[in-house]
Length: 338
Ligand SMILES: Nc1ncnc2c1ncn2[C@@H]1O[C@H](COP(=O)(O)OP(=O)(O)OP(=O)(O)O)[C@@H](O)[C@H]1O
Image (tube, rainbow, N blue to C red; front, side, top):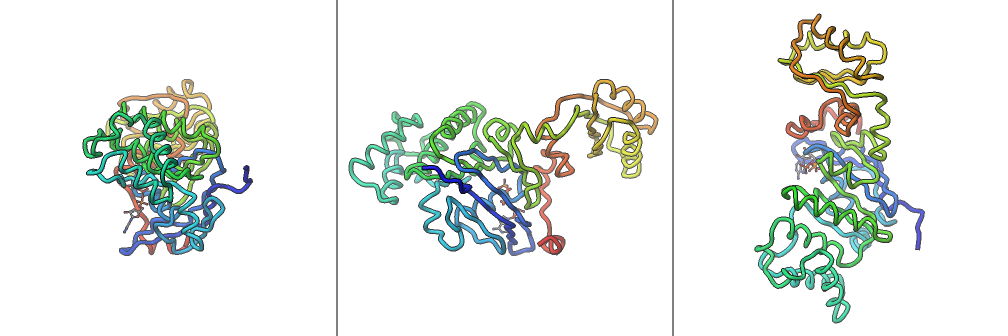
C-alpha cells in the first residue's frame, strides 16, 4: 500500500519549558514516507523536544503535527501504535535477558504464542543477538544494548521509527556497525526513519535528507548534496595566531569582502572562514589582506564545502562551537517570533 501523505508533517511547533527556555521556536518539518531524514543540530538545539512531541511524550505550546497520518494531539494512542521509538536512554530492563525484553515488548503490543516467538527469534538474529539472547542485558556491550534498543523499537513493525541519537556513546567500531544496520533498515519496504544526531558525519552518511536545527527552528533542509551544493565554490578557512578584537574582526570581514568572488566571510574566534569561487587563486590575496590588518596567520586550508560549512552559513557559527556552548533563546527574546 502506498500513501502519498508524508510520514511526518509538523508545522510551527513551539515549546517553552519552565525557567524561560524556548526549546522550539516555530519548527516545521516534513518527512516523506519511506525515507531516512536526519535532524541535525548541536546540543540543546531542540531535536529531542521535537521527537518527544512527535512521539506523543510531550505537548507543544503551539503548532500541529501529524505522524503516519494521525494527529499527535488528537489521537496520540493511534500514533503510538504506528511508531517505534528508540530513545537516547535505553528502555531495556538490564536485569532481564535480551530475549525476555523482546518477549515483554511483543506482549505489550498484543503478540502471543508462535507469532511472538517467531518475531523475537527474527529480531535476535537480525541484530546479531541470538548468542547473547539468554544473558542479562546489563552484561551487554554498549553496541549490543543499542542494537537491542532498536530491535525493541521494531517489534510491532512500526511505519515510522524514531532514533534519538542512535550512536551517542558508542565506540567507533560499534558506531560503524550501527550505521550499517540503520542503512539496511532504511532499505526495508515502507519504513520511514527520523533520526536525530549531533554528528555531522552520521547525518551525511545515513540521511537522504537533512534538516538542520538551530535554536528551535529548522534553518536549512535538503539532501546532503543539495545543502553542500548551495555553497558555490570552495571553503577557505584561515586559523589566526590569536582571536582578533571585535573592531579588528569587522575590519577583516570588510577587507575580504572587497575581493571579487569572495563572500560569506565569518570571523569566529581565531577562525576566519569565507567562500571563494576559486579557493586556491584567492588564498594569496586573502593572506595579504589579513597581514595588512595586522592579523598573523597560523594555518590556511581550502576545501570543498562540508556540512559544517552549511551549518556555519545558516547558523552563523561553527557546529562544534555551538555543540559545546548551546545558546538557548530566553523566552522573552523569542517572543516576537512566537
Ligand atoms: N524538561 C526540560 N525543562 C527545561 N528545559 C528543558 C527541558 N528539556 C529540554 N530543555 C531545554 O530545551 C532546549 C532544547 O533541548 P533538547 O533536549 O530538545 O535539545 P537537543 O537538540 O535534543 O539536545 P541534546 O542533543 O543535548 O539532547 C535546551 O536548552 C534544553 O536545556
